[in-house]
Image (cartoon, rainbow, N blue to C red; front, side):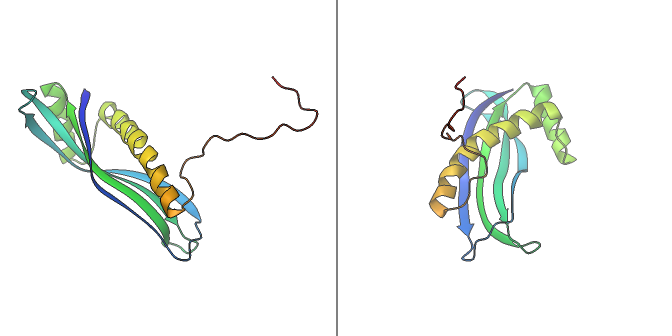
Length: 143
């Protein structure tokens, strides 16, 4: 399995005027998976449509204080037998772990980096902890 294409088809974000986040959650949904013929590569591929969402829950149940989301497509080149297995499983709304985990990780890497910029623009807290330095305390040994 090889990822040969990645595109965004939608980017959105908002922050409520009375922003008080209670919790942050990250969600990745596959919205569609279809088999396609790549004329450039002369090979069968799978196009995976996805939605990546960082939701900031409000203090009240089911309320949203903000959200950042990305929609897009990933094109994957794979063996024909693997493509058949993936599309067959998708019809049941299931996916093999050997396919799902690497694609989730790829989406997390690509979208999390972009989400940090949009979170900064909207003045939302980052959804992942960023590295930071802290000053040495007097008497602390350097290692």
